[in-house]
Image 1 (cartoon, one colour):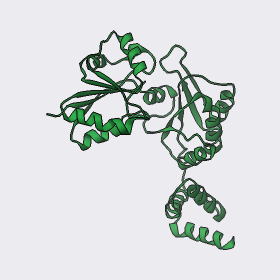
Image 2 (cartoon, helix red, strand yellow):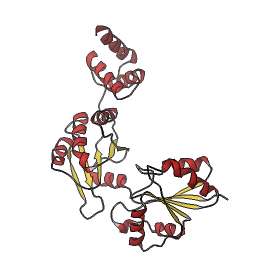
Image 3 (cartoon, rainbow, N blue to C red):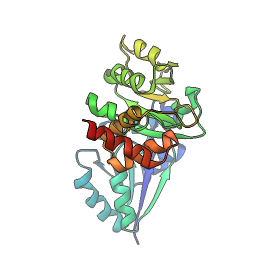
Image 4 (spheres, rainbow, N blue to C red):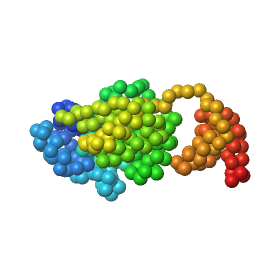
Length: 281
């Protein structure tokens, strides 16, 4: 009989937020795979838990190598508990590779639901939460970051990002440049911790505020693009929008189709504008 893979949420700040089932799983697991074994020891001490199973590290640097080992243990009947430093495994944290491998091997995968910085930030942001998308961490390089933001410039769902505090000012500057300085956003810092803070306002104001320096774990929530009717765009603007999408990595055919939808025009009209601009140059 095969074992079970258990993904367990851990507190993102306040230890009292630990799910009650987490204690039982920590005590009963045959193997505890932890993103950071030192943080796991701190968690078990705080919860008054004694783990009897084998503890192994499972982080970005060894995910590929350790996944087969854990799948072998699961195939042999082990109960494997996966925990990360904070929040739910697989959400911008290790876990996806192991879950995919376990599913492929027909091994049962279940979860102990727990705290999530994504959902907590959304709830506190004051922005629409009926539809949202999680974008994780943006690229560190400025050009790649701008390109990623341009990909979702017209996205109408609320956007959620994780960011490092030392890059927050650059990220907010880039967001203000791409989304507009008046787009509403919220910077959620140190959620559920002693110095929790939620700073709300237009991106332009938040970018200026972040210049003073911000510390702690950061989650940024950004309002989606306003819903508007088809725009009346001249040929030059159509070509510019296609070029922006191409620079962000889209194929020309896909970029032309997307711009045509944005402008409410036939694809052929956008295609002709692109061809004319190419011939003119």
